[in-house]
Image 1 (tube, rainbow, N blue to C red):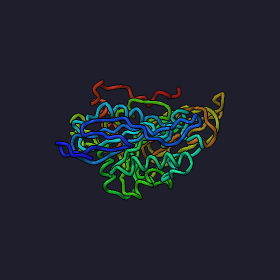
Image 2 (image 1 turned 135 degrees about the vertical axis):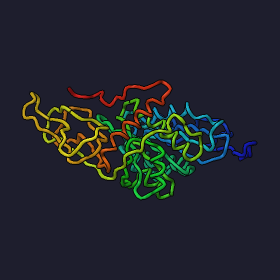
Image 3 (image 1 turned 135 degrees about the horizontal axis):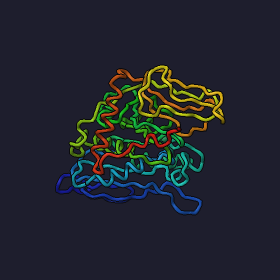
Image 4 (image 1 turned 180 degrees about the vertical axis):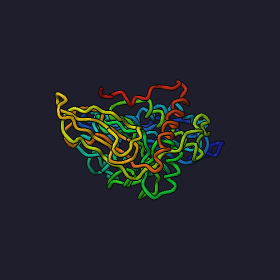
Length: 358
Ligand SMILES: [Zn+2]
């Protein structure tokens, strides 16, 4: 590693050398495919002209949750290595196998986000987890992992963090998504592994599987940039300085279909609801026997099913319990307005109503 005039050193990854102030796309071999060809982990390293932290941003750990890919493409265009202090490793499609198949899982039917730390000689999922750990997580002092809801479901853009860490709360507040949720860590997940290695991680949940939507992409791009600015890697973005304070929650409730049939949804993600408020009605094929679904708590809808054809017991709404609910709606409104208004293309239509049933 050689010293540059600015004091930043070269960044070596997967046998590639990235000089300060430059970017490279690198392909790290993961495993051998049926065809005999190598399957690769695709990374872009944006290596700043100035020294600083190493941060990764990852998408499609679940291969059908592709919203992070869109966020990372926009981030790549926005980050200028000449003006960056530190290094950003972008991983737009970590589970490339699932990404190609439009599937959450790998071809060995494993969930990559339950397969950490993995092993070089393990299952396909284990080899991929090990490769990502070895070449990316192990190099970084912060990670931002981007997920979406499952297929036929939409999540309000939100940040999930492990409970009990003031630094994670600080980073999540800097990110500025409408809602911050402190959620438990699952065994084998990237976040659980990262916590064990003391690499702070934010998990963003936003949008729907296999879809891009403008609100999720804009909140993702501006949120990551705000975090990078917060830790001194880029200049603060003036256009986003007046973003509202996110609502915080550590408890949530699922509301399930009381019968099978067809739903007529009255509320959607981002809406503030009070206990007893009508969320949707579910009736039979002719609309017979309609049953009302009401909110069991005061809170914010943070996710909803977009498919109106339901079986009894399907989870149709995810509602977060939020303190000071009366202010939460204003916060969400001000955050989404600030983010949409700050985009160079101008305000756009949030697509949250796209699948509204009438
Ligand atoms: Zn996911």
